[in-house]
Length: 398
Figure 1 (cartoon, helix red, strand yellow):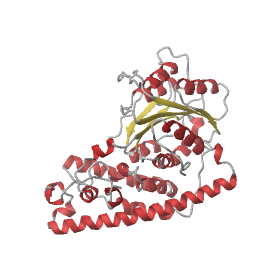
Figure 2 (cartoon, rainbow, N blue to C red):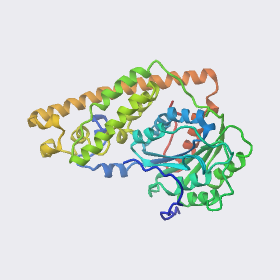
Figure 3 (cartoon, rainbow, N blue to C red):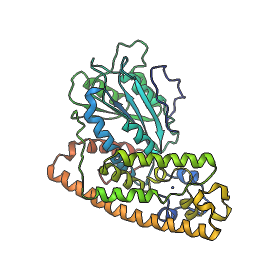
Figure 4 (cartoon, helix red, strand yellow):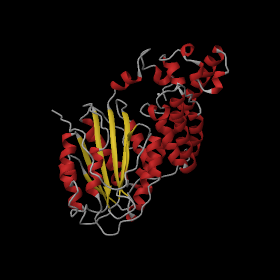
């Protein structure tokens, strides 16, 4: 029987970053019963929760750059499961004592835009003495997140780094204890060794073994599959149009929170390459990406699914552009947004499929896909998620 450890008090360490403050259009509305709550719907689906624990010291520049490109690919890989799962991700960036920070923590969240903006702030700096604060980072990854208690949830940590843990810090919670807690909490820990430092290998292997995960090794750069495609710009151009179909409503606090999501999206457009925006867009147009796309309270999806009757929404809870409209105009406006959303989602899905096929052909031609970061993460996920009746058959998404 699965047991769960109680919430533990985190060890008091240095800098801890504080943090993260359905596209349920007609294609998804058909699956919903009129009047059924989002919470009730979500309870019917399995979930995947992933914490990435990343060494952010100076030697990890290549891997961090790859991670910024690959996080949406991993999200898209997770989204291909049957049944489509709810997805939450979080981060622990770590260095060592004496560096600018020891750890930076981003909690598990279904707001992947927010998680991504935190990841974009990671820089490869510091380190230099060999071992790093792996023990603290792993302990935080296991004990600090608000992990789901649902037995259908696949809970997993990916520990990624190139240096062994400091074993000489007397006030550390050492990795063997963290692995024990992970096992009690039904959390799998997989270890990814970057580079081939011999001192690291036995620790990474033992952590994976103790926490019922897998160990694998990649090049210092991460060995990720990274290609630009002829479809990236076209998909990225559709992204802002898809985001523009969202209409947020509610009280002042609720609308402010949703406006913050819009600003997150805008920051991604400003900072990310078209290939990254394309991957985010494909995820948001998928069934598993609904929550990241819509947030918690979005009018078009709520009206289209029948969860909300437009006539019952108080005028002051509507955005300004709708407040001045008549009831008939509001109804028509929302219906038009829903129709636009469906067209855009269909286009994105078709282009996303072409993009994936283009990259798969490149990978096959070069013959190196089996050893890539993408393929090895996929194999972990496929095997481990199957134990939760979450099935992956399509291979890694790029």
